[in-house]
Image (spheres, rainbow, N blue to C red):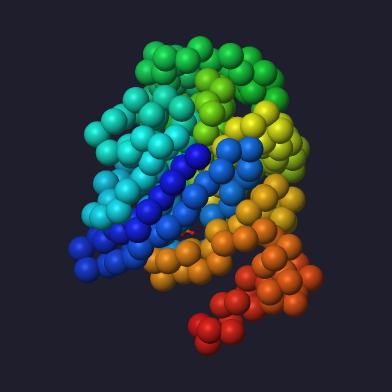
Length: 236
Ligand SMILES: Nc1ncnc2c1ncn2[C@@H]1O[C@H](COP(=O)(O)OP(=O)(O)OP(=O)(O)O)[C@@H](O)[C@H]1O
Ligand SMILES: [Mg+2]
């Protein structure tokens, strides 16, 4: 369980998170949605410890994360924009991350096969296509079989086969009781995968419920129309 209370974060005068209250349950896929610059990535970075909040608290399984960094071992994180040294090969990046993690990379071979990456192991990152990089980033996030998966726009740039396989992977992780958090703008993906939609707007949780509840609240048949309706209703 990830428990977020009254979380606040500003960058200078820009108040990005203005009191986020959210409990993220295991065995569920929670989708973070909201317009560009709503603070989805900032919230995720607070959970993984890359951004330090100004106020509020995050607890994972009851333990406040501040100053207690061991919790990160439980998390597999895929950044929206990942940065690794460009001269490293795929195999070298995998090695680097395996050396940093305590848990063995038990899913590595399976995931490399799933995304057809064996042929790229000897290639430096700088020569990879955008989608191939995205696949490598997904393998890095998932290979050590973490309890909590936090994926910032996981299928952006993936071809249809890889995207399908990634989505099936997320459903399998959920079936195994994992906690999955994903930020996404892909409404079809959210509709299919998520148990819960958390809509961030202007630094707060604007809606928190199931996709069906969101559709019912707006009277719209699809999630995309439901979210567009919510935004329009407020005169944005
Ligand atoms: N390190 C930083 N320094 C200054 N401003 C930042 C920093 N990180 C994020 N911001 C600002 O905070 C706001 C929220 O950014 P964030 O990346 O969390 O949005 P997002 O909801 O993930 O958007 P997107 O859908 O485009 O990915 C933006 O206005 C962004 O410019
Ligand atoms: Mg983002």
